[in-house]
Image (cartoon, rainbow, N blue to C red; front, side):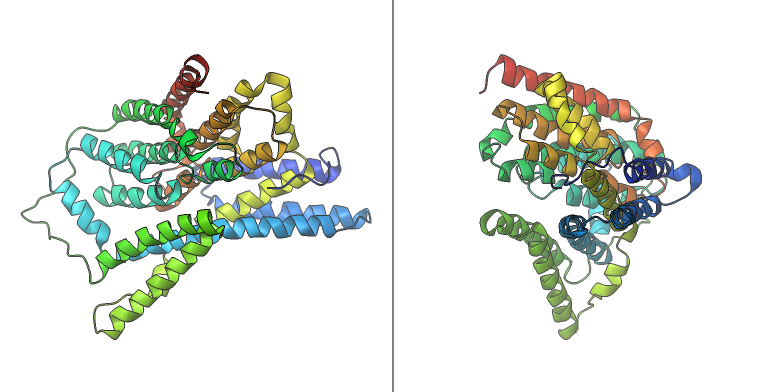
Length: 435
């Protein structure tokens, strides 16, 4: 996000827009109770809030150009995230169609792993894949694997989903390109590549504590699986190529962004073009190909629309001047307390605009404090199910199973890990004096 052009928080449009945001947030949080998909209130709020701002400008005879410029910048920011997610989801749907996850599920379950071993295995993969790929893509892939293992056992699926989200966010927090917020801090010059690696200890400890507490809720036993009667799944033609195309696409997106300063979605869209060419080649050679547009139809569009709506709503609040109050935290309570509080704020609002606002304000802080806010913004989103891109993605992938209410019942386990991460950061940076 960008600096607010106006301070309209005390005007009628500022008050009404804030009320709309709060009401929409309520319906998002109570999605199960009212059986309304979270994308509906988010999309309504995000679009209507800016429409009211337009009415306010017109009624008061104000120049609409600043609002128009702000909306254009917002559209560009949303488009980058939107298309990044769209390509990632298309790859996942293609992997599902090629039966890649069926084969992976068979290999995991046929080994006789218990629910607890599968719980730890998916969490471990999530933590170490997300620093290389990104937390959202990692969470989407592993939640798909988790859901294919056992679609009905919610006692396994819910803690397993939370574990994947927490591990993905924690894994992304210690890598400059594992999360959008860490990438923002890195490119803004708030730390060198090696500086982020010092966050590994608090990140992994945070996930391990939360994972251990969650594992206490994982049922004993193994998934129902009879090798004698179960059909051994066969990966469809080109499945392995799709896997490598997916890995290459992520690598191209990261390298293109870092070396050539392309938007991350540009590399993803290039990868999508390769995927389309691969489907054409399969069909041309007479193999069992796939229709990329059929796979696109299966993408969780509600998740994409939710992001559009919530980022638009936050953009409206920012334009009105509400996010400027975040800056006051630093002068009121000091950087350490403020940065710890950022984790809780990012879980409610969204870590991207919060981190952007802090970077724009650029309070006087050392590297230790910049690493702290990077850590809290990264792992703080795990406190609420839709506080991070990974959480929202898994909610869409496991609709009706991994929900706000299901997550909030076990959110105390995430909070325990968050507190441990803060303690370890303090020991590393303040007591040991790494800087």
